[in-house]
Length: 482
Image (cartoon, rainbow, N blue to C red; front, side, top):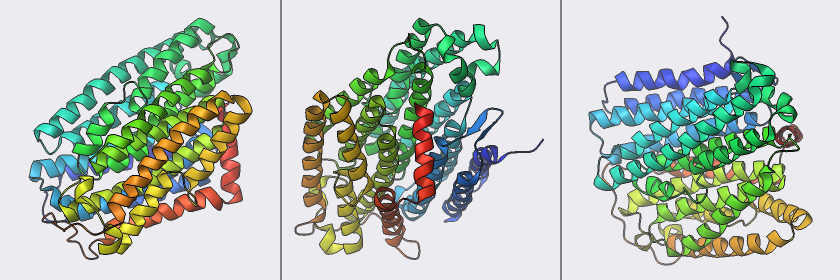
């Protein structure tokens, strides 16, 4: 049997996980193997952009997942590069080093599978595997704070994944009289084809469970509390893949369900429910950003804000704005977390009060971080400015009452982030207290600043210089999502 590209993309990281679990953690070899596997995975993920759309068994290649798979490959490679430079300072023993690297590749394979799945049951399994791998990475230090964060992550996301499973079963039951038993009842394509004839009550109930369940993993209020703890207490690189990748996969699962339920005229309108969760997330996060003293917690709350904005965009049907926002947030947030991680290892602390004047003391790092924070605040020339502008325009055209609420959230969040930019990057430098083992690879700090600047450059291109073929691809994605 021929092994198609989507399955190769999934199984390569998993094979890498087995290798890394077996590899003796001597010197830099595990980090370099992790980087090599991520590099090959990135190349394969980019190749998906050239694969014709179609379904192969449990996998689907379409305009929705092609850009997100490519994005996952890029961020995975950038994170592996950052990890190679910082992992020595994490002070893992042999067992923890194996667990960390193996769990990273296990997460990446599951992330690819979640995005490429046509079968909603397989997607559920993939997101659960990614969650368990993330919990392991968050807990890998074994400190009381890390264990508490991992436990909260496991409990809240466990509740979410249970609700999502029940919603998936309800979707299957709604389609079973029309498509019969077996895999077709969980195929996204098959469910879309029969959605108009399904029982609208079952579809409505299924979507409620799915949006609450997967919304938990997407960091949407009210089951969002795991995210700030997980991103503040886990190893530095985990913050990039949690905010940049896991949240996206969970929201894509919601969008796949929305595209099914939205085709049934008698079912609950999925848009207003997404807008409600998104607006609550935006407003709560925009207020919480003003009270953070820990830099990683601050930007974790920023992730909640931006996932809320994405949910509002998709709920309004502004799918192009939503896709641009998901991708732009992943790129800029990962770059910011690389900058914060590097600063934390240079200053010996991740408290905002202990990190200051980076633009003066470490110009490449400081100005890169400043640009990234400005991008998160919605300032040009980054893609989040374009997506937020498109969102406000769409809200003004479809639901004018939303404009004031969105505007207040954007203003509060943007001002809080600019305030953080001034504290972290400008003013007099704070004393350095380097963590032993940080940036000992040849090239030193370049391993953090290089990937961060590359991701920022991609975000600029995404906002203002998209190739025509990529614009057409995103247009196809917006039509598929309904």
